[in-house]
Image 1: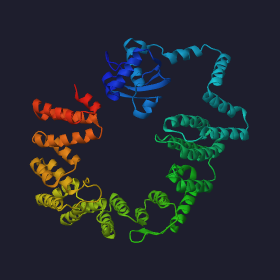
Image 2: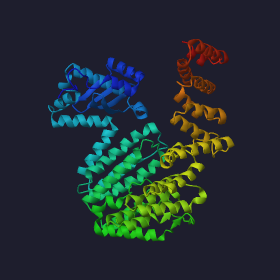
Image 3: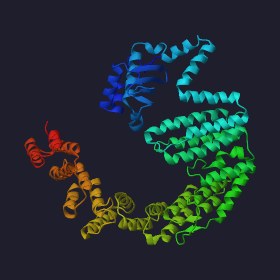
Image 4: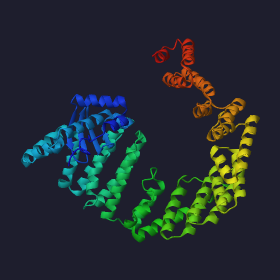
Length: 567
């Protein structure tokens, strides 16, 4: 198969490469390619594998064709930012190979494979042993593999446990950049367990997987797991445990008790939904025990309502986990009433009421959904209308043709926490009269000087919402009049200036000038200069030159700013 997408076209589109990386990174990738730093290891139809020489040797994998490009690199830049210069260099090298016809010939790995086939078994053994002496990772992998053949069962378990302990050991704290290397070592140990999980050692693998999970969970307290390496290792270990259980099923009641303890107390939720995940292994006997345990724990939990919030020493997540377990069984039996009752056990917040009402609605029980949602609004009315619950009630009432009641709920919420979204809903539900009523309310609230909690100019403050409405409706004269009369945040003024700069250039220039001063005083010179350049499009050259000269005069001691302002 050819390495080109079509005749004359490169395998990887250079324009897309530049878009993925930016001009600077693309140029550095070009330099790496020209400098001969790329060694193509494999040039297959679906994948390009290469080694790129840099500060160290990096492994690059690319897939896709044309503008659809994907892949990875072992360098830190890829971990931090994605597509890197090494990937650009590899793509360009692959394009060059395709253009010269090399794509149809043997690549480096192909040549190596062909060469190894000519060697004797003894020669290959010597070669691999020599490599293992110099590569600790390869040595560990081969040593463990050899243990499968030569060790008795007890010794094998001891060696594997020791390997797991060594791979998961943490000395100090592992920073973000080093976590992937640690995870690779753990993965190597798990490779052996995965290979054994479906074989005669499955029962031992089950115990070792449990041990590995405990070790990984402990290690995760001392690593920066921003990329989720620890979670991925736990998930893989759980899958190995499941495979081992399927190959050598444990006593079902004992397994149910083990899994129930894991699911209800696992900090990483690797066993969430374990009853369903292990259903085939648990069988009816194990599932019955699982359910019995969940029901017994559920009965001990007090009901939670908005009026009475019990004090309990239970794990704060235990009720949700127990509910999920029992919901699995109720869903398995098609018992909707039981599923609703489970969700009605905890109604300690408007959010809980909303979840219950939405579930009823999803099950086709619209009347019950409305009843539950309205009950939640009434129970928590002293805390003010809840956004999600109010919108749900209004939507359900509107469906039933009770638009006046629906609008009343929306008005109460709008007057408490006005927003552009609520304004749009009211205008759609109650017609043109709602539009002027809402604007009148916002203008009166702005004039009164009353503001919501938080910043002086909150996102849903009356002035901000008023201006947002005028911008949406392109009523720019009214918007600028509102700014002059009531004031507004710089964010709202910039939004208005951007939207109306063609029709109101003077007002926009005033806002931009104030923003430039903020940026300059904050040391954000590049952003300030970009804004100054935008301002040149809104006035004649003489006026712009005078403005720039004034900035230079007032900020002449800021050398870096002066450099940026001087062409």
